[in-house]
Image (cartoon, rainbow, N blue to C red; front, side):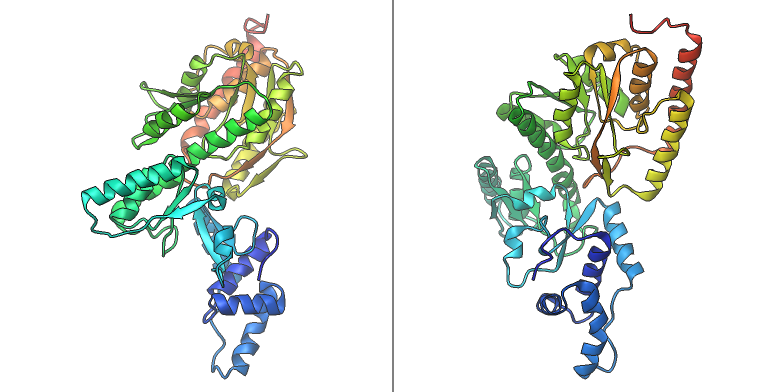
Length: 424
């Protein structure tokens, strides 16, 4: 019983409805899919099957609206539904007879395809036992294994802590919003958030090495209060290209990016989020475009060849409205100015000084200043997916006026500065 391919939204909704149907467990689920071919047909057949089996009432089945509500609730938590048989479903779990029809995943789901070792043990373990579990998990992670445990007190928690830097999976009995024990909620968030940061760094480094792109990876720790800094320092020992830096001054997205810019040693940079929302392969394409002679390369998710995955509808609406306003105000063809994921030569970045934006409005300041000040630029398609863990820091209500301020500032420069700031 397999889906044999990635399901579309309607198919995933119906897969969830069938999995949640009354009296349908993994065995029955597999039988129904094998018999009827897909979840929608199986759902349609359920009432008749129940009647023939002598049930007085048909089984309770989630309505399409209820299934969509669960999917949307999961998405708000940064979780993704994985259906058995889809390429993203863990292959070792798919080999179970029968596998669970669906699971929710938070964080880097790609780690579910790696070699894994399970470490579980007593909840009331001794301090020595927990130290041993922590050390064992760390060493297994260094040897290339993903450590799997159950997030319970004692040995489980120690195993997760020991393997945070190399990759760990917590298996929960409830949903992504039901973390137990409550005191491990912080550990749960670290597994999702920090694991995603390390995964982003690894994927980026491997991609750039494979393509022969000389590089350094500057990661700015902008006042984190968890173990992010310790993880980055540990990772630096194994990855000479990594340069973690701490912004010990005032915090904010723009300040963090500016702090990173001041640390760069190369002749060009790509600004990239650390939550795997940006595609590492696009960084290589940016590099190739810069080598064609452009000062700036701007990515667009909304041109032919680009795309977005799991973009919240309201944010998408606001994004398109804001970018339409910018496009008309500056009379430019770029339709994704607000996206941070862009590439610049150092000369263009230096030409944008002084930087004014301490927050996310820097994502608008840099491209607009580059354009207005006469630096050459081009646009290429990119892909973007909604973050799979952690909490987005962009607050639309707080940022609206700041975006408008920067847009009007650069617009006034364009028409009234008489070219004082243009590229010489």
